[in-house]
Length: 356
Ligand SMILES: *Cc1c(COP(=O)(O)O)cnc(C)c1O
Image 1: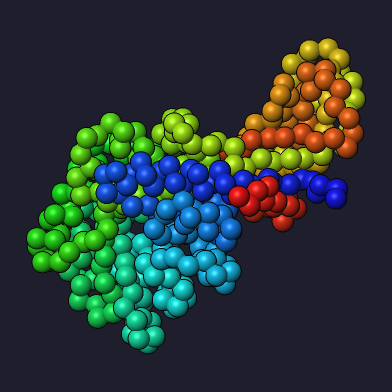
Image 2: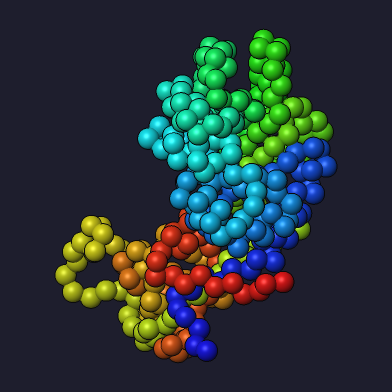
């Protein structure tokens, strides 16, 4: 069979391995994991590999992805990471636990939960400085009080999200702050918070450096499981596989050309006037892949190849004078942005390379 191109090759055994190593690592201090599936659009086989690796929950930001996994028979506790008021009824129908920060939305959830005869579980997200989602600390007590008054909502935990928007580190201070808030809320309202969700793939350094994790007993991990790295410095976590995903594209032109464009300069397809270094005549290679498919800055070519630039449907590489043949394959590894875009492109075939 002729291999399809472009394609993304996915190793389920590597993903399962990563989930397993991380489950054991964090499990040593009583921290359970949510496997975050949004970067892979809720691919059911990948979610299954995470579950086999030991994650207790599957979390996604989109209901459509959760529906996709449920329809495929994936069985887990499903967590919605991003809750929209307009989707309240669908949240109740499809999701076990949702992350929330707005009373309006939680009221709507309670309303639909009562219509569907359900009790909906929520985790209240607290703002600890990264300035994406979260209830401010000064508003938290009132927020909890009003939420507890809703008949069909159960607060199962609190959480925070750092290192996503504002680039604020999840350090000991932040985790201590979240632990303290958990204690305070439990005391003030005489409730038990089962889940204290301290963050995401950026929490690795904190975990490794701290002897005590306080009340933190859950993390939501996407990138660490999928790409094997933490996300404060994007370093590989010891024992994890970094290449569960490989992007492969076809060479459609391979020629010796000057390294400087010739003629009168003007804007390129994306509105900028590019500049180039004169390195004389070089072997240039074009692969059938473009900005419509991929975040080109998220691609790392193997061997000695270097990306010179790209347009909607072409990526141009310097092959270091290596004679790549038309029709041959070029392999790239991916960062999170590259993975996200590649998984979302309808033009990139998704291929599982092992079923072990
Ligand atoms: C995407 C997301 C995560 C996962 O982040 P990673 O850096 O991929 O581990 C965790 N929590 C929330 C709220 C998210 O939106």
